[in-house]
Image (cartoon, rainbow, N blue to C red; front, top):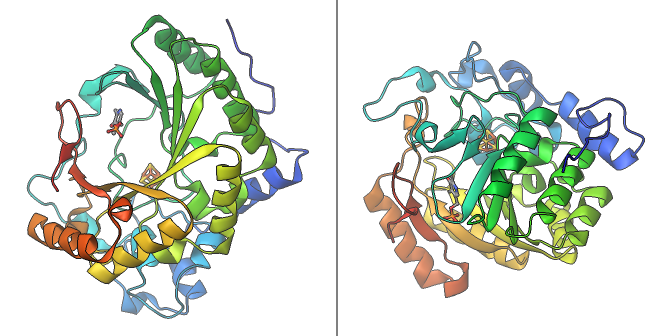
Amino acid sequence: MDILLPSQASSGPSHNNASASWQRSLQQAIRNPETLLEHLGLSATQLPIDIANTFSLKVPLEYVAKMRQSDPTDPLLRQVLPLDEENNRAAGFNTDPVGDLNARQSPALLQKYQHRMLVLVTGACALHCRYCFRRCYPYGETGHAEMQQQLMQIRTQKQIHEVILSGGDPLLLSDSHLTAWIQALSAIKHVQRLRIHTRLPVVLASRITDALLSSLQESRLQVFMVIHSNHANELDETSANALQQLRQADCTLLNQTVLLKGVNDQAETQIALHTRLGELQVLPYYLHLLDRVQGAAHFEVAESQALSLMKAMREALPGYLVPRLVREEAGKAYKTPVY
Ligand SMILES: *Cc1c(COP(=O)(O)O)cnc(C)c1O
Ligand code: SF4
């Protein structure tokens, strides 16, 4: 079966106001470090920024609004601002830290684990996270032909029970393109679960449009959405509303966090994040030790400190709000449990 994408799938003017608004927000995202600092009442002399970084700055104004003014140590700012430190080379840090390249069935289809297939449906994101483990990934074309090819491979592998839309950020696809994915996957009998890994409910809540919600709700697939929030300050009322709508559309909501020095490496920060997630009915999934990608060494937290954070969380939180501390190791059958 060949699922045709509507002609407006890639971009272009939309007649849907809600979708036009998130796409406009992305067009207006800040891409210049000095502009970002100006917005926050900071000067470039307070922070050693790297203007020439090839993994450029990108951050929507909606996310900037969640940052504190005049605070060079703000945990959200630190996630997006390119600093000179990224040019330091550190032993053990490389461009393919979790063995993605070896797990490829085709340029955008990764299989590492039984019964689960991961599809890199786009290389684009709403914001660029400085610690991104795929910051060096060679994303290829992600158009209609590639999608048909990927669907064909999923169709022929009957042991695949779960398809994970990843990227990049899969919610950067238009509603019509995502709906085409959801409908095509729903038509494959051996696929039972759809998982979407995304930062959009956290970064740009207006992305959760009515059209997306109906596609998710109408699907026969069980839908798991894993939001990637690293700090309670990211989870304001607009994000809370988007998450509530997703729950009402029958999505199971989980959160995955990366443990990051200077962002969320203090016990009270982790406890506040997981308390807030609980309030929003988002259950914690993984707390990831940093993937050792080139340029991110200054974010690494020692394993001994991670273990004491876990102990503090276990003491302060109900068991169901404590994430599993894991590390991803190339070639393993599952993510390695650390605590
Ligand atoms: C992390 C990952 C998954 C999902 O693993 P879970 O432990 O089920 O969350 C699946 N495929 C790939 C390629 C991954 O990197
Ligand atoms: S949203 Fe995910 S894929 Fe995109 S830059 Fe951030 S960590 Fe990387």
